[in-house]
Image 1: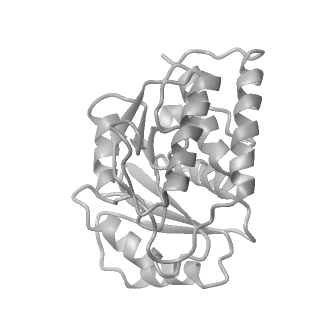
Image 2 (image 1 turned 90 degrees about the horizontal axis):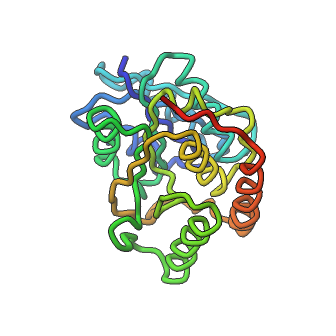
Length: 248
């Protein structure tokens, strides 16, 4: 068993899931993997189960958690976090299944926390310019200015506030009240970073190159962006009436 768990949420990712698992298992650092599948009708979970039986022995373990129906990215990660905490992992990482996040960068995120002492390492598209490949310009601008909007409203010192490529130290997820997290899309990613910052944890952005998927379909929707816009205001106002115990 590794000391680090990579959580990969899936919904209809049969084109990518075996490839992304194999890429993570091939890294120099051993990472355990948890696939959280939201009842994919395309058989994604069955592919993972097949890999559990057929992959050669290694220093990593492959887990799968099947859920009924499409319940949202945020709730998938919350269930993954609870699994990680219950099973004693010291470092918990998030990544997409579609290779928009380069699996090799997992090692850099992990090292920022394990070796450099940060509590949360964020794979950032915007900390060193705009590093996005294969997105239409309109989507790049929307994402970039969404992060600027979040920074303006919340004051959080993070360039890529909606990033979903992250490494957490265990103590961050033990401190944040996971049962109070309410958002499921982009706003979930914002809320987690905001709370980690408000609790006094040390955040570090690691520059990455984000490459849009080449297989499968995007899960983006207008509702996700709407949740983010309104959610930022909500979490900011709520924080004015809340006491945060600064992490030691």
